Length: 633
Image 1 (cartoon, rainbow, N blue to C red):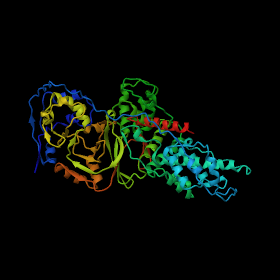
Image 2: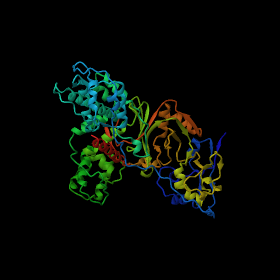
Image 3: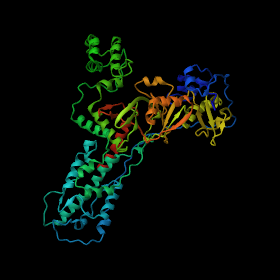
Image 4: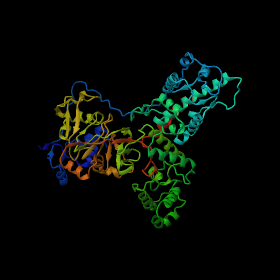
Protein backbone atom coordinates (compact mmCIF):
# COMPACT_ATOMS: atom_id res chain seq x y z
CA UNK A 1 0.00 0.00 0.00
CA UNK A 2 1.44 3.36 -1.02
CA UNK A 3 1.64 6.12 1.54
CA UNK A 4 -0.45 9.08 0.42
CA UNK A 5 -0.20 12.53 1.83
CA UNK A 6 -0.93 16.07 0.82
CA UNK A 7 2.01 17.90 2.27
CA UNK A 8 3.17 20.92 0.36
CA UNK A 9 6.79 20.44 -0.58
CA UNK A 10 8.57 23.63 0.40
CA UNK A 11 12.07 24.40 -0.83
CA UNK A 12 14.84 23.63 1.61
CA UNK A 13 15.47 27.26 2.44
CA UNK A 14 11.82 27.82 3.41
CA UNK A 15 11.72 24.53 5.29
CA UNK A 16 14.66 25.66 7.37
CA UNK A 17 12.65 28.70 8.46
CA UNK A 18 9.42 26.85 9.03
CA UNK A 19 10.01 24.34 11.72
CA UNK A 20 13.38 23.05 11.14
CA UNK A 21 15.18 23.52 14.45
CA UNK A 22 17.96 25.43 12.77
CA UNK A 23 17.08 29.10 12.40
CA UNK A 24 16.34 31.57 15.18
CA UNK A 25 13.08 33.33 14.43
CA UNK A 26 10.44 35.55 15.88
CA UNK A 27 7.26 33.50 15.70
CA UNK A 28 4.78 36.05 14.44
CA UNK A 29 6.95 37.48 11.66
CA UNK A 30 8.19 34.04 10.65
CA UNK A 31 4.83 32.44 10.08
CA UNK A 32 3.25 35.55 8.60
CA UNK A 33 6.08 35.60 6.10
CA UNK A 34 5.57 31.96 5.21
CA UNK A 35 1.80 31.64 5.30
CA UNK A 36 0.27 35.11 5.62
CA UNK A 37 -1.05 35.20 2.04
CA UNK A 38 -1.41 31.51 1.32
CA UNK A 39 1.06 29.16 -0.32
CA UNK A 40 1.69 28.14 -3.88
CA UNK A 41 4.46 25.64 -4.26
CA UNK A 42 5.28 22.98 -6.83
CA UNK A 43 7.53 19.93 -6.47
CA UNK A 44 10.26 20.28 -9.06
CA UNK A 45 13.10 17.92 -8.21
CA UNK A 46 12.75 14.76 -10.28
CA UNK A 47 15.50 12.94 -8.36
CA UNK A 48 13.44 13.26 -5.18
CA UNK A 49 10.57 11.33 -6.82
CA UNK A 50 13.07 8.63 -7.71
CA UNK A 51 14.31 8.29 -4.14
CA UNK A 52 10.83 8.41 -2.68
CA UNK A 53 8.94 6.35 -5.24
CA UNK A 54 6.44 5.05 -2.70
CA UNK A 55 5.11 8.54 -2.08
CA UNK A 56 2.51 10.17 -4.30
CA UNK A 57 3.44 13.85 -4.47
CA UNK A 58 0.82 16.41 -5.36
CA UNK A 59 1.30 20.09 -6.08
CA UNK A 60 -1.37 22.32 -4.61
CA UNK A 61 -2.59 25.86 -4.99
CA UNK A 62 -4.22 27.38 -1.94
CA UNK A 63 -6.38 30.48 -1.88
CA UNK A 64 -5.41 33.44 0.25
CA UNK A 65 -6.15 32.84 3.92
CA UNK A 66 -8.20 35.34 5.83
CA UNK A 67 -7.31 35.84 9.49
CA UNK A 68 -9.47 33.85 11.84
CA UNK A 69 -12.06 35.82 13.76
CA UNK A 70 -11.00 36.29 17.36
CA UNK A 71 -13.37 34.50 19.75
CA UNK A 72 -15.58 36.68 21.90
CA UNK A 73 -14.49 34.78 25.01
CA UNK A 74 -11.37 35.89 26.83
CA UNK A 75 -8.28 34.38 25.24
CA UNK A 76 -5.49 32.73 27.22
CA UNK A 77 -2.27 34.75 27.29
CA UNK A 78 0.64 32.98 25.63
CA UNK A 79 3.22 31.94 28.20
CA UNK A 80 6.36 30.94 26.38
CA UNK A 81 8.14 27.76 27.40
CA UNK A 82 11.59 28.71 28.58
CA UNK A 83 14.80 26.77 28.03
CA UNK A 84 16.73 25.32 30.98
CA UNK A 85 18.57 27.90 33.05
CA UNK A 86 21.93 27.96 34.81
CA UNK A 87 22.10 28.04 38.58
CA UNK A 88 24.48 29.42 41.15
CA UNK A 89 26.21 26.27 42.31
CA UNK A 90 25.80 25.41 45.98
CA UNK A 91 28.32 22.96 47.32
CA UNK A 92 27.26 20.53 50.01
CA UNK A 93 28.39 21.61 53.47
CA UNK A 94 30.80 19.34 55.26
CA UNK A 95 29.65 17.50 58.37
CA UNK A 96 31.46 16.47 61.51
CA UNK A 97 32.52 12.82 61.62
CA UNK A 98 30.98 11.20 64.69
CA UNK A 99 33.31 8.99 66.72
CA UNK A 100 30.92 8.63 69.67
CA UNK A 101 29.91 5.04 68.97
CA UNK A 102 33.54 4.00 68.45
CA UNK A 103 34.70 5.71 71.64
CA UNK A 104 31.92 4.30 73.79
CA UNK A 105 32.09 0.73 72.45
CA UNK A 106 33.23 -1.80 75.16
CA UNK A 107 36.69 -3.09 74.31
CA UNK A 108 39.09 -5.65 75.71
CA UNK A 109 42.44 -3.97 75.28
CA UNK A 110 45.88 -4.36 76.75
CA UNK A 111 47.26 -1.04 77.92
CA UNK A 112 50.81 -2.35 78.01
CA UNK A 113 52.50 -0.51 75.13
CA UNK A 114 54.23 -2.87 72.74
CA UNK A 115 55.46 -2.05 69.24
CA UNK A 116 53.90 -5.26 67.86
CA UNK A 117 50.33 -4.52 68.96
CA UNK A 118 48.14 -2.40 66.70
CA UNK A 119 47.34 -0.09 69.60
CA UNK A 120 44.04 0.96 67.99
CA UNK A 121 41.95 0.15 71.06
CA UNK A 122 44.09 2.13 73.45
CA UNK A 123 44.28 5.03 70.98
CA UNK A 124 40.53 5.42 70.33
CA UNK A 125 40.12 7.66 73.36
CA UNK A 126 42.23 10.23 71.54
CA UNK A 127 39.27 10.89 69.23
CA UNK A 128 37.43 12.59 72.07
CA UNK A 129 36.97 16.22 71.08
CA UNK A 130 38.44 15.67 67.58
CA UNK A 131 36.64 17.84 65.01
CA UNK A 132 37.07 16.20 61.62
CA UNK A 133 34.89 17.62 58.84
CA UNK A 134 34.14 15.62 55.70
CA UNK A 135 31.53 15.21 53.00
CA UNK A 136 28.40 13.52 54.36
CA UNK A 137 28.89 10.22 52.53
CA UNK A 138 32.57 10.16 53.50
CA UNK A 139 31.78 10.77 57.16
CA UNK A 140 29.31 7.88 57.08
CA UNK A 141 31.83 5.59 55.37
CA UNK A 142 34.42 6.29 58.08
CA UNK A 143 31.91 5.67 60.85
CA UNK A 144 30.70 2.42 59.21
CA UNK A 145 34.12 1.05 58.32
CA UNK A 146 35.86 1.63 61.65
CA UNK A 147 32.76 0.49 63.51
CA UNK A 148 33.17 -2.89 61.81
CA UNK A 149 36.97 -2.91 61.53
CA UNK A 150 38.48 -1.18 64.59
CA UNK A 151 42.07 -1.25 63.42
CA UNK A 152 44.66 0.99 61.79
CA UNK A 153 45.13 1.21 58.03
CA UNK A 154 47.79 3.94 57.98
CA UNK A 155 49.68 3.25 61.20
CA UNK A 156 51.96 0.41 62.21
CA UNK A 157 53.28 0.35 65.75
CA UNK A 158 53.73 3.98 66.72
CA UNK A 159 54.46 5.50 63.31
CA UNK A 160 52.83 6.20 59.99
CA UNK A 161 53.45 3.15 57.79
CA UNK A 162 54.69 2.80 54.21
CA UNK A 163 51.13 2.56 52.90
CA UNK A 164 50.33 6.00 54.32
CA UNK A 165 53.52 7.46 52.85
CA UNK A 166 52.52 6.24 49.39
CA UNK A 167 48.98 7.52 49.83
CA UNK A 168 50.17 10.99 50.88
CA UNK A 169 52.49 11.13 47.87
CA UNK A 170 49.52 10.49 45.58
CA UNK A 171 47.45 13.15 47.35
CA UNK A 172 50.32 15.61 47.07
CA UNK A 173 50.53 14.99 43.32
CA UNK A 174 46.80 15.56 42.75
CA UNK A 175 47.68 18.49 40.49
CA UNK A 176 48.90 15.97 37.92
CA UNK A 177 45.23 15.26 37.22
CA UNK A 178 44.04 18.85 37.43
CA UNK A 179 42.95 18.49 41.07
CA UNK A 180 43.96 20.81 43.89
CA UNK A 181 46.47 19.17 46.27
CA UNK A 182 45.49 21.59 49.06
CA UNK A 183 42.09 19.89 49.29
CA UNK A 184 43.70 16.56 50.28
CA UNK A 185 46.43 17.76 52.65
CA UNK A 186 47.12 15.70 55.79
CA UNK A 187 49.86 16.42 58.28
CA UNK A 188 51.64 13.20 59.33
CA UNK A 189 52.57 12.61 62.96
CA UNK A 190 56.15 13.63 63.76
CA UNK A 191 58.68 10.81 63.49
CA UNK A 192 60.03 11.33 66.99
CA UNK A 193 57.91 10.97 70.09
CA UNK A 194 58.22 10.70 73.88
CA UNK A 195 57.87 7.09 75.10
CA UNK A 196 56.97 8.41 78.52
CA UNK A 197 53.88 10.14 77.11
CA UNK A 198 52.13 7.37 75.14
CA UNK A 199 48.59 8.82 75.48
CA UNK A 200 49.74 11.89 73.53
CA UNK A 201 51.35 9.72 70.84
CA UNK A 202 48.25 7.54 70.55
CA UNK A 203 46.12 10.66 70.13
CA UNK A 204 48.36 11.86 67.28
CA UNK A 205 48.21 8.48 65.56
CA UNK A 206 44.44 7.93 65.79
CA UNK A 207 43.69 11.44 64.57
CA UNK A 208 46.15 11.05 61.70
CA UNK A 209 44.45 7.74 60.84
CA UNK A 210 41.01 9.28 60.56
CA UNK A 211 42.16 12.44 58.79
CA UNK A 212 44.07 10.48 56.14
CA UNK A 213 41.11 8.15 55.57
CA UNK A 214 38.84 11.19 55.09
CA UNK A 215 41.17 12.83 52.57
CA UNK A 216 41.92 9.60 50.72
CA UNK A 217 38.18 9.00 50.32
CA UNK A 218 37.73 12.57 49.07
CA UNK A 219 40.49 11.98 46.51
CA UNK A 220 38.98 8.69 45.38
CA UNK A 221 35.51 10.18 45.06
CA UNK A 222 36.80 13.21 43.15
CA UNK A 223 38.92 11.08 40.81
CA UNK A 224 36.08 8.67 40.17
CA UNK A 225 33.09 10.99 39.77
CA UNK A 226 34.34 14.58 39.86
CA UNK A 227 34.20 17.33 42.45
CA UNK A 228 30.86 18.81 41.41
CA UNK A 229 27.46 17.35 40.63
CA UNK A 230 26.97 18.56 37.04
CA UNK A 231 23.19 18.31 37.20
CA UNK A 232 23.17 21.15 39.72
CA UNK A 233 24.83 23.50 37.24
CA UNK A 234 21.91 23.51 34.81
CA UNK A 235 19.02 21.53 33.40
CA UNK A 236 21.14 21.20 30.28
CA UNK A 237 23.31 18.71 32.18
CA UNK A 238 22.02 15.17 32.64
CA UNK A 239 24.40 12.64 34.16
CA UNK A 240 23.52 9.51 36.15
CA UNK A 241 24.96 9.11 39.60
CA UNK A 242 28.19 7.11 39.72
CA UNK A 243 27.77 4.89 42.79
CA UNK A 244 30.89 4.29 44.85
CA UNK A 245 31.13 2.17 48.01
CA UNK A 246 33.50 4.28 50.06
CA UNK A 247 33.64 1.91 53.02
CA UNK A 248 34.71 -0.81 50.58
CA UNK A 249 37.48 1.52 49.36
CA UNK A 250 38.92 1.60 52.89
CA UNK A 251 38.63 -2.17 53.13
CA UNK A 252 40.55 -2.56 49.87
CA UNK A 253 43.26 -0.15 50.97
CA UNK A 254 43.65 -1.97 54.29
CA UNK A 255 44.66 -5.08 52.32
CA UNK A 256 46.59 -3.38 49.54
CA UNK A 257 50.37 -3.44 49.35
CA UNK A 258 50.35 -0.87 46.53
CA UNK A 259 48.24 2.10 47.60
CA UNK A 260 49.58 4.27 44.77
CA UNK A 261 48.40 1.95 41.99
CA UNK A 262 44.99 1.53 43.58
CA UNK A 263 44.41 5.27 44.07
CA UNK A 264 45.56 6.15 40.57
CA UNK A 265 43.28 3.45 39.14
CA UNK A 266 40.27 5.36 40.45
CA UNK A 267 40.72 7.91 37.65
CA UNK A 268 39.01 7.25 34.28
CA UNK A 269 40.90 4.54 32.43
CA UNK A 270 40.65 5.67 28.83
CA UNK A 271 43.09 7.04 26.29
CA UNK A 272 41.45 10.48 26.05
CA UNK A 273 41.84 11.08 29.79
CA UNK A 274 45.48 10.00 29.67
CA UNK A 275 46.10 12.29 26.69
CA UNK A 276 44.66 15.24 28.63
CA UNK A 277 46.84 14.41 31.64
CA UNK A 278 49.90 14.34 29.37
CA UNK A 279 48.88 17.65 27.77
CA UNK A 280 48.56 19.26 31.19
CA UNK A 281 52.09 18.21 32.08
CA UNK A 282 53.47 19.60 28.82
CA UNK A 283 51.58 22.88 29.20
CA UNK A 284 52.87 23.50 32.70
CA UNK A 285 56.45 22.98 31.53
CA UNK A 286 56.05 25.11 28.40
CA UNK A 287 56.69 28.77 27.79
CA UNK A 288 53.95 31.27 27.03
CA UNK A 289 53.08 31.89 23.38
CA UNK A 290 55.66 34.24 21.85
CA UNK A 291 52.90 36.10 19.97
CA UNK A 292 49.79 36.72 22.04
CA UNK A 293 46.75 38.15 20.23
CA UNK A 294 43.53 39.43 21.74
CA UNK A 295 41.22 36.39 21.61
CA UNK A 296 38.19 38.66 21.09
CA UNK A 297 39.63 40.48 18.07
CA UNK A 298 37.08 41.31 15.35
CA UNK A 299 38.71 43.19 12.48
CA UNK A 300 36.99 43.81 9.15
CA UNK A 301 38.43 45.37 5.97
CA UNK A 302 38.82 49.09 6.48
CA UNK A 303 39.19 48.75 10.23
CA UNK A 304 42.23 49.30 12.39
CA UNK A 305 43.82 47.40 15.25
CA UNK A 306 47.28 47.12 16.86
CA UNK A 307 46.75 43.34 16.71
CA UNK A 308 46.98 43.30 12.89
CA UNK A 309 50.83 43.21 12.67
CA UNK A 310 50.82 40.24 15.04
CA UNK A 311 48.32 38.38 12.86
CA UNK A 312 50.34 39.10 9.72
CA UNK A 313 53.44 37.64 11.39
CA UNK A 314 51.45 34.56 12.36
CA UNK A 315 50.07 34.18 8.82
CA UNK A 316 53.62 34.25 7.46
CA UNK A 317 54.88 31.77 10.04
CA UNK A 318 52.00 29.29 9.95
CA UNK A 319 51.31 29.24 6.19
CA UNK A 320 53.27 27.26 3.60
CA UNK A 321 56.13 28.39 1.34
CA UNK A 322 53.77 29.12 -1.55
CA UNK A 323 51.80 31.56 0.62
CA UNK A 324 54.95 33.32 1.81
CA UNK A 325 56.26 33.61 -1.73
CA UNK A 326 53.02 35.01 -3.15
CA UNK A 327 52.45 37.55 -0.39
CA UNK A 328 56.05 38.36 0.66
CA UNK A 329 55.98 41.92 -0.66
CA UNK A 330 52.56 42.66 0.80
CA UNK A 331 53.58 41.28 4.18
CA UNK A 332 56.75 43.37 4.20
CA UNK A 333 54.86 46.50 3.21
CA UNK A 334 52.35 46.12 6.06
CA UNK A 335 54.65 44.77 8.75
CA UNK A 336 53.85 47.66 11.12
CA UNK A 337 50.47 48.74 9.76
CA UNK A 338 47.42 48.84 12.01
CA UNK A 339 45.04 49.46 9.11
CA UNK A 340 43.35 46.52 7.43
CA UNK A 341 43.55 47.80 3.84
CA UNK A 342 41.52 46.27 1.02
CA UNK A 343 44.63 44.87 -0.67
CA UNK A 344 45.20 42.64 2.42
CA UNK A 345 41.86 40.89 2.04
CA UNK A 346 43.08 38.23 -0.49
CA UNK A 347 46.02 37.52 1.82
CA UNK A 348 43.74 37.01 4.84
CA UNK A 349 41.35 34.82 2.85
CA UNK A 350 44.23 32.65 1.64
CA UNK A 351 45.51 32.27 5.20
CA UNK A 352 42.04 31.34 6.46
CA UNK A 353 41.63 28.78 3.70
CA UNK A 354 44.95 27.16 4.67
CA UNK A 355 43.48 26.41 8.12
CA UNK A 356 40.18 25.08 6.81
CA UNK A 357 38.25 28.16 7.92
CA UNK A 358 35.58 30.01 5.98
CA UNK A 359 37.53 32.43 3.81
CA UNK A 360 35.43 35.49 4.61
CA UNK A 361 38.29 37.95 5.12
CA UNK A 362 37.17 38.86 8.63
CA UNK A 363 39.83 38.40 11.31
CA UNK A 364 37.73 37.18 14.22
CA UNK A 365 38.08 34.85 17.22
CA UNK A 366 38.10 31.71 15.08
CA UNK A 367 40.95 33.01 12.92
CA UNK A 368 42.87 34.22 15.96
CA UNK A 369 42.48 30.84 17.68
CA UNK A 370 43.57 28.96 14.55
CA UNK A 371 46.81 30.95 14.19
CA UNK A 372 47.71 32.39 17.58
CA UNK A 373 46.24 29.67 19.70
CA UNK A 374 45.19 30.46 23.25
CA UNK A 375 47.27 31.70 26.13
CA UNK A 376 49.00 29.12 28.26
CA UNK A 377 46.70 29.88 31.19
CA UNK A 378 43.59 29.51 29.05
CA UNK A 379 44.76 26.18 27.67
CA UNK A 380 45.58 24.86 31.15
CA UNK A 381 42.14 25.85 32.37
CA UNK A 382 40.45 24.16 29.41
CA UNK A 383 42.38 20.94 30.00
CA UNK A 384 41.58 20.94 33.72
CA UNK A 385 37.93 21.55 32.86
CA UNK A 386 37.96 18.66 30.38
CA UNK A 387 39.48 16.32 32.98
CA UNK A 388 36.73 17.20 35.46
CA UNK A 389 34.03 16.64 32.84
CA UNK A 390 35.47 13.29 31.79
CA UNK A 391 35.10 12.09 35.39
CA UNK A 392 31.32 12.42 34.98
CA UNK A 393 31.48 9.80 32.23
CA UNK A 394 32.06 6.04 32.33
CA UNK A 395 35.70 5.10 32.83
CA UNK A 396 35.50 2.94 29.70
CA UNK A 397 33.88 5.01 26.95
CA UNK A 398 33.02 1.88 24.99
CA UNK A 399 33.69 0.62 21.49
CA UNK A 400 32.10 1.26 19.10
CA UNK A 401 30.82 4.65 20.17
CA UNK A 402 29.60 7.94 18.73
CA UNK A 403 31.06 11.13 20.18
CA UNK A 404 29.52 14.51 19.46
CA UNK A 405 31.65 17.42 20.65
CA UNK A 406 29.52 20.55 20.56
CA UNK A 407 32.27 23.22 20.71
CA UNK A 408 34.10 21.45 17.86
CA UNK A 409 30.84 21.07 15.87
CA UNK A 410 31.82 17.49 15.03
CA UNK A 411 30.46 13.97 15.39
CA UNK A 412 32.81 10.99 15.32
CA UNK A 413 32.23 7.26 15.05
CA UNK A 414 35.01 5.36 16.84
CA UNK A 415 35.55 1.61 16.71
CA UNK A 416 38.48 -0.36 18.17
CA UNK A 417 40.10 2.88 19.26
CA UNK A 418 40.11 4.33 15.74
CA UNK A 419 38.01 7.27 14.53
CA UNK A 420 36.44 5.58 11.53
CA UNK A 421 34.18 8.47 10.53
CA UNK A 422 34.08 12.16 11.44
CA UNK A 423 31.79 14.89 10.15
CA UNK A 424 30.57 18.40 10.71
CA UNK A 425 27.42 18.97 12.73
CA UNK A 426 25.03 21.78 13.58
CA UNK A 427 24.13 22.11 17.27
CA UNK A 428 21.77 24.27 19.29
CA UNK A 429 21.90 28.04 19.27
CA UNK A 430 22.71 29.81 22.52
CA UNK A 431 19.01 30.27 23.34
CA UNK A 432 18.27 26.58 22.65
CA UNK A 433 21.44 24.83 23.71
CA UNK A 434 22.17 21.19 23.06
CA UNK A 435 22.22 19.29 26.35
CA UNK A 436 25.28 17.57 27.82
CA UNK A 437 24.66 13.85 28.47
CA UNK A 438 25.25 10.34 27.18
CA UNK A 439 22.87 7.58 26.14
CA UNK A 440 22.64 4.56 23.87
CA UNK A 441 21.61 4.50 20.20
CA UNK A 442 18.51 2.37 19.57
CA UNK A 443 17.17 2.84 16.04
CA UNK A 444 17.20 4.60 12.68
CA UNK A 445 14.05 6.17 11.26
CA UNK A 446 14.01 6.54 7.46
CA UNK A 447 11.93 9.32 5.89
CA UNK A 448 10.97 10.28 9.43
CA UNK A 449 8.11 12.22 10.87
CA UNK A 450 9.13 15.28 12.84
CA UNK A 451 7.33 15.49 16.14
CA UNK A 452 7.24 19.22 16.82
CA UNK A 453 8.37 19.93 20.41
CA UNK A 454 5.85 21.60 22.70
CA UNK A 455 8.19 24.57 23.07
CA UNK A 456 8.07 25.26 19.32
CA UNK A 457 4.30 24.75 19.19
CA UNK A 458 3.75 27.30 21.97
CA UNK A 459 6.58 29.75 21.32
CA UNK A 460 6.56 29.83 17.53
CA UNK A 461 3.46 28.22 16.06
CA UNK A 462 0.72 29.32 18.45
CA UNK A 463 0.81 33.04 17.58
CA UNK A 464 0.38 32.19 13.88
CA UNK A 465 -2.29 29.55 14.57
CA UNK A 466 -4.43 32.14 16.29
CA UNK A 467 -4.47 34.17 13.09
CA UNK A 468 -4.51 31.27 10.63
CA UNK A 469 -5.78 28.06 12.30
CA UNK A 470 -5.63 26.00 9.11
CA UNK A 471 -2.06 26.50 8.02
CA UNK A 472 -0.89 23.23 9.60
CA UNK A 473 -3.51 21.35 7.53
CA UNK A 474 -2.16 22.90 4.35
CA UNK A 475 1.53 22.52 5.13
CA UNK A 476 2.22 18.85 5.67
CA UNK A 477 1.54 18.66 9.42
CA UNK A 478 -0.73 16.29 11.31
CA UNK A 479 -2.50 17.30 14.53
CA UNK A 480 -3.68 14.62 16.97
CA UNK A 481 -5.36 14.73 20.37
CA UNK A 482 -4.29 12.91 23.54
CA UNK A 483 -5.92 9.70 22.25
CA UNK A 484 -4.05 9.82 18.97
CA UNK A 485 -7.06 10.88 16.86
CA UNK A 486 -6.41 13.13 13.85
CA UNK A 487 -7.95 16.58 14.16
CA UNK A 488 -8.10 19.35 11.59
CA UNK A 489 -5.97 22.25 12.70
CA UNK A 490 -8.61 24.63 11.39
CA UNK A 491 -11.23 23.16 13.74
CA UNK A 492 -9.32 24.05 16.92
CA UNK A 493 -9.87 27.25 18.88
CA UNK A 494 -6.20 28.07 19.43
CA UNK A 495 -7.06 31.21 21.41
CA UNK A 496 -7.96 29.16 24.48
CA UNK A 497 -4.45 27.74 24.89
CA UNK A 498 -1.57 29.77 26.23
CA UNK A 499 1.11 27.62 27.87
CA UNK A 500 0.20 23.97 27.35
CA UNK A 501 -1.29 22.91 24.05
CA UNK A 502 -3.08 19.54 24.49
CA UNK A 503 -2.34 18.39 20.94
CA UNK A 504 0.57 16.73 19.23
CA UNK A 505 1.87 18.13 15.95
CA UNK A 506 4.11 16.26 13.55
CA UNK A 507 5.44 17.00 10.10
CA UNK A 508 4.91 14.22 7.60
CA UNK A 509 7.80 12.74 5.59
CA UNK A 510 8.74 14.84 2.58
CA UNK A 511 11.66 16.64 1.08
CA UNK A 512 10.69 19.67 3.17
CA UNK A 513 10.69 17.72 6.43
CA UNK A 514 12.92 19.32 9.03
CA UNK A 515 14.65 15.98 9.68
CA UNK A 516 15.48 15.25 6.07
CA UNK A 517 16.05 11.62 5.05
CA UNK A 518 16.66 9.99 8.42
CA UNK A 519 17.11 10.42 12.14
CA UNK A 520 19.18 8.41 14.61
CA UNK A 521 17.36 7.89 17.89
CA UNK A 522 18.66 7.48 21.44
CA UNK A 523 15.50 8.24 23.45
CA UNK A 524 16.12 10.80 26.19
CA UNK A 525 14.10 13.31 28.17
CA UNK A 526 15.61 16.20 26.20
CA UNK A 527 14.10 14.94 22.91
CA UNK A 528 17.51 15.24 21.27
CA UNK A 529 18.63 13.03 18.40
CA UNK A 530 20.90 13.15 15.35
CA UNK A 531 19.36 13.71 11.95
CA UNK A 532 19.63 14.92 8.38
CA UNK A 533 18.65 18.44 7.33
CA UNK A 534 17.47 20.06 4.10
CA UNK A 535 19.61 23.12 4.88
CA UNK A 536 23.05 21.96 3.82
CA UNK A 537 24.55 25.46 3.55
CA UNK A 538 24.88 25.72 7.33
CA UNK A 539 27.67 23.14 7.29
CA UNK A 540 29.88 25.59 5.40
CA UNK A 541 30.00 27.94 8.38
CA UNK A 542 32.76 27.80 11.00
CA UNK A 543 30.42 28.36 13.94
CA UNK A 544 27.45 26.03 13.52
CA UNK A 545 25.09 26.77 16.42
CA UNK A 546 21.69 27.20 14.75
CA UNK A 547 19.31 24.44 15.85
CA UNK A 548 16.72 24.15 18.59
CA UNK A 549 18.98 21.59 20.28
CA UNK A 550 19.15 18.50 18.09
CA UNK A 551 22.34 17.47 16.29
CA UNK A 552 22.22 17.81 12.52
CA UNK A 553 24.65 15.62 10.57
CA UNK A 554 26.57 16.56 7.44
CA UNK A 555 26.74 12.89 6.37
CA UNK A 556 23.68 11.22 7.94
CA UNK A 557 23.82 8.21 5.60
CA UNK A 558 27.43 7.54 6.57
CA UNK A 559 26.65 7.74 10.29
CA UNK A 560 23.58 5.53 9.96
CA UNK A 561 25.59 2.91 8.05
CA UNK A 562 28.35 3.03 10.70
CA UNK A 563 26.09 2.47 13.71
CA UNK A 564 24.16 -0.25 11.89
CA UNK A 565 27.38 -1.96 10.81
CA UNK A 566 26.20 -1.94 7.21
CA UNK A 567 26.82 -0.08 3.95
CA UNK A 568 25.70 3.31 2.71
CA UNK A 569 24.00 1.47 -0.17
CA UNK A 570 21.84 -0.38 2.36
CA UNK A 571 20.83 2.94 3.93
CA UNK A 572 20.07 4.43 0.51
CA UNK A 573 17.87 1.47 -0.35
CA UNK A 574 15.92 1.83 2.89
CA UNK A 575 15.40 5.54 2.18
CA UNK A 576 14.08 4.78 -1.31
CA UNK A 577 11.42 2.49 0.18
CA UNK A 578 9.63 5.20 2.17
CA UNK A 579 9.03 5.57 5.89
CA UNK A 580 10.40 2.71 8.00
CA UNK A 581 12.36 1.97 11.15
CA UNK A 582 15.45 -0.18 11.69
CA UNK A 583 16.70 -1.25 15.10
CA UNK A 584 20.39 -1.03 15.97
CA UNK A 585 21.32 -4.56 16.96
CA UNK A 586 24.35 -3.81 19.14
CA UNK A 587 25.22 -1.59 22.08
CA UNK A 588 26.56 1.76 20.88
CA UNK A 589 26.91 4.54 23.45
CA UNK A 590 26.50 8.08 22.17
CA UNK A 591 28.10 11.02 23.96
CA UNK A 592 26.43 14.36 23.32
CA UNK A 593 29.38 16.10 24.91
CA UNK A 594 30.85 19.52 25.57
CA UNK A 595 34.66 19.75 25.66
CA UNK A 596 36.61 22.87 24.72
CA UNK A 597 39.81 20.81 24.92
CA UNK A 598 39.70 17.36 23.36
CA UNK A 599 42.37 14.94 22.07
CA UNK A 600 42.20 13.25 18.71
CA UNK A 601 42.97 9.54 18.46
CA UNK A 602 46.70 10.32 18.20
CA UNK A 603 46.55 12.20 21.51
CA UNK A 604 46.93 15.70 20.03
CA UNK A 605 44.71 18.07 22.00
CA UNK A 606 42.67 20.60 20.06
CA UNK A 607 41.10 23.69 21.62
CA UNK A 608 37.72 25.24 20.86
CA UNK A 609 35.68 28.30 21.79
CA UNK A 610 33.30 28.03 24.73
CA UNK A 611 30.13 28.71 22.70
CA UNK A 612 27.77 28.32 25.68
CA UNK A 613 30.16 29.72 28.34
CA UNK A 614 29.94 26.46 30.24
CA UNK A 615 33.61 26.39 31.19
CA UNK A 616 33.19 29.58 33.18
CA UNK A 617 30.15 28.18 35.00
CA UNK A 618 32.00 25.00 35.89
CA UNK A 619 34.91 27.10 37.14
CA UNK A 620 32.54 28.95 39.49
CA UNK A 621 31.10 25.64 40.72
CA UNK A 622 34.60 24.35 41.48
CA UNK A 623 35.36 27.56 43.34
CA UNK A 624 32.25 27.01 45.47
CA UNK A 625 33.45 23.50 46.35
CA UNK A 626 36.94 24.73 47.17
CA UNK A 627 35.53 27.47 49.41
CA UNK A 628 33.49 24.98 51.45
CA UNK A 629 36.44 22.64 51.82
CA UNK A 630 38.92 25.33 52.82
CA UNK A 631 36.53 26.82 55.37
CA UNK A 632 36.20 23.45 57.13
CA UNK A 633 39.89 22.64 57.16
